[in-house]
Amino acid sequence: MPFHDREFMSGTRGTMAVDWEERIDVKRLREERHERALERMREAGLGSMLLVDDPNIRYVTGLAMTGGSGADHYSLLVEDGTVVHWDTADHASNERYNCPWLADIRYACPGLGNVPRSSGSDTARTFLLEKMAETVASALEEYGVADEPMGIDTAHGGLVDAFEAGGVDVRPAACTAVMEDARKTKTRDEIECLRQVAAICEAGFQAIVDNLSVGKRESEVWGDAVRELWRHGAMVQGGYLTSGPNTWPKHQANTTDRLIRPGDLVYADFYNVGYLGYRSCYYRTFSIGEPTDAQRDAYETARDNLYAVLDRIEPGVTTDEIARAFPDMEGEHADFYDATEHWQLTTNHWAHGLGLQLYEVPLIWRGLSLDHPIEIEEGMTMAVETQEPADRQGVRVEEMVVVRDDGVELLSQWPVEEITVVDG
Image (tube, rainbow, N blue to C red; front, side):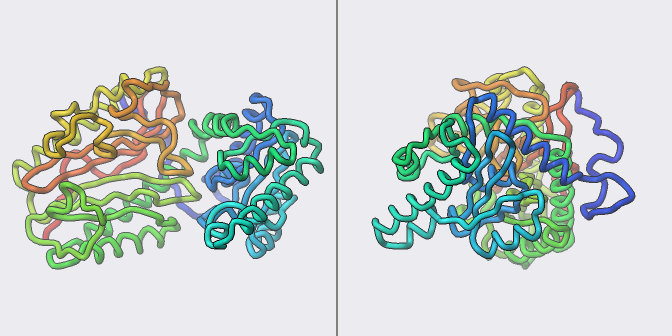
């Protein structure tokens, strides 16, 4: 398949709000996501859905959901389209002022997460679960959906029991399926968010080029890159930079205080860098001075493996067909790991969906897809990643893409043909 030729100006506009051109329409972004979830909820025969998972809450409400102390926030979507949102006292008060599209915001009881875990009391945990269920059941009554099935995006036994004890017909599996179906393909504004976060990551790669030198610690260079990401409005909740022998196998601490030395390979992974909540996953490899022939060959292998996968991605194909383009056990260097099956080699060679979470549908991986395939759909967004060892070091490369009817669209634009060489 050829690559999709993106539309004029896509992914090249600025990150700030202006009145002189259309950029990301955040109102449309919120409304289209809300309508997708609502439509699929109705089709599933649910009268409401209780959302506890942060990305699901953000998808339906548009609230930031940047992380908290546990399940101290939850949202209820009811069949007439109304959203009831519960949050901590401070957050709820702020949201009432700043989020006029949400008309019913209440104070939450944290039945899950850190509060009950740290209480040290079984009776306290029971109280919190029952009170949380009571707050939701009250809203179900108010909105006239108490007698209809309620989806819930967690199968937490205690919470489900608390609802069922109150006579609520709880459907965890149905809610999971609804939200998965709503989120697996992206709207035009969601895709533009992913284009923008890719562009911000490229500013981070440039900061690495500008600051990478012999004698600096991995952590110093990574700090320079993260500063640049934040400067462009990203929320950095992951990522790392690693060098030299830490690149193969990848060091379990990711970024360390190791001093960068002449001849090192360095790679950075901007994963979980968010722009308006949409997450990146984007590898590039750098070399301190000219790479060796073995290192160039390794990079060429990794790049070619990646593009062999991209060539198979199109609507209608199944993930088993695509996964076969990833390296076999020999190509995975399974003997190095003393591995005998692909499921033992998680994260080495695969593709995973991107959106409000780092891992969304689809997952394309020899360890899973050959026996459990799903169909690729237009509008899916994903990251495809490969790696290869060389000279006691390793290279990694990754592209962010959108599935189009005429080939994938590359969201990532940092040069990929060769290792980026940095004078040490």
